[in-house]
Each structure stands twice: as C-alpha cells, then as structure tokens.
Length: 94
Image (cartoon, rainbow, N blue to C red; front, side):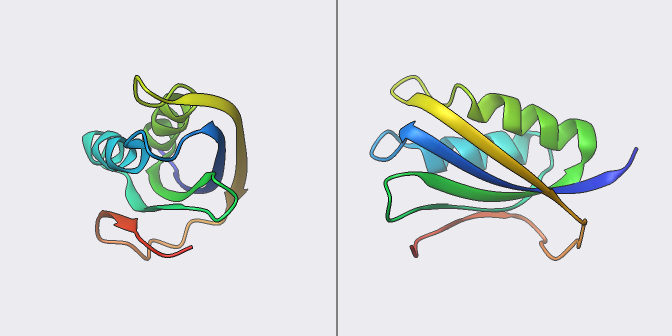
C-alpha cells in the first residue's frame, strides 16, 4: 500500500465545533500523522500523511466532521509523501 500526503482545506461552520479535536482523534484512529489548525478565514487546514486508504478515510470523515459542524467544501491537494511527522497534532497558529 502506498504512502501519501494530502493538504486539505475544509470550509463551512468548522470553527468552534471541536473540528480540530475530532480530526486529531480520527487521524489517530487511522494511524495518520500530520497536523490540523484553524485558518484566519474561519476554515480549517490539515496535512495528513499515511497509508493511502487511511488518509482517504480521514478525508472522507472531513466531509462530514463532528455533529455540530456544517461542512460546505473540502479541497484536497495531493503532495509527495515526506514522512516528516511522528504523530498527529493540533496547531494553534493561523
């Protein structure tokens, strides 16, 4: 199974609804590494690295998000796998 990296931007009502915390939990469930952060435009941004099927599962989850979220758009940009992360974390910077 190939290793992949995805740079993802999620838009909608995705801040103030624990989107980042749930994304971290979902990524860890699928053994995906990387980070997630809020954006200044009220969106959420993430980098996911891992086995292709696992990353795709997390991206699929991002289309729905946690119960309080309302996702209107998910943009996925596939990048070359780097393997730079040891775990998945929430980043607090914009």
